[in-house]
Length: 452
Image (cartoon, rainbow, N blue to C red; front, top):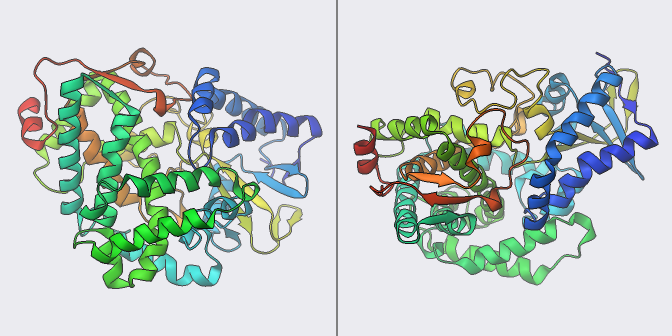
């Protein structure tokens, strides 16, 4: 393997733009564009991207690949050792506040820790870690969180029973009610206008610096968040943050938490699709819930299923870093402001490295194989890894387990029932039907009965 990065030719750069970076940007890095994600699934764009990157990695003996886009220079990692160096070296000399990310996220979370300066990060990062109980598998308010999930899952199951179907819009409405409640409190549960404001600003974020700011929309979002934070009840993230760091501190971080839960919803929906197509997976999820006891139990297999959904179909399409100062790779020096890129879909399914690259393998998260691989980074890795990982996995695994008690079929089940799995799956297009005559309600009691 060669350590010194190589400049791609004009032709190779064009192919990378067409097959790798272009589809990534077109789908929407901040919020997905439905028409484009449907196209991406039809074309299986991730397969083409993987093929090209493997070809270039072999051609250049594993050297990082340098892509020039005008004055902007991006270095693409192609080996796990590159990923380790970049992520373990964050936030200095590899800051997560990349040029692209600052342009995108400033539309709706200008004070978020992810795009904070080094000085602001010193206070915001510890605040996030403490508030989200980063080191604990179950958050201190986990009992409240899972109770919210249980209630919304039961309501969703009732709707599925009446209609006989489940699609993304129906799931997302229930998911957002749960998210708004556990983040901001009961006053926000039905505040769909807050979600609409956030969604509009996230769509602006898809265009990064190339879309003018809409400060009146941002002010409206901040005002609604402030109103909910002021009355948030104990057991919510807003109340905990208000009591620990003050209302101003927590308000600045909430847009990012909401943004992160959107990706978690997509992962949960995809995991539910695989479980619905594979009875053995579904039964194991249901049995784990039934034997776990009430409350915020750790559901290791359910977590593994969610993590597998993120590994197979990453919700963060690329992990971006910018250098804060000059760095040397091999015989080359790169100035401050150089971009470094980890393309998740390439590393997560690298068949040259992973025996389970295209398989659904929750066990890899139970036996440590996945966590030991620097190329598998569903929640990033290193000093600036996602502090909300355990909160997200707690909520997502419990939502998945409760919905798995429904005997659902998925419209694309023939593509998900066996390995290898498709490289690209559009979660917005998934459709479920109700298969069972004995309708499960999604609560723990019914899960126990079904598992028995």
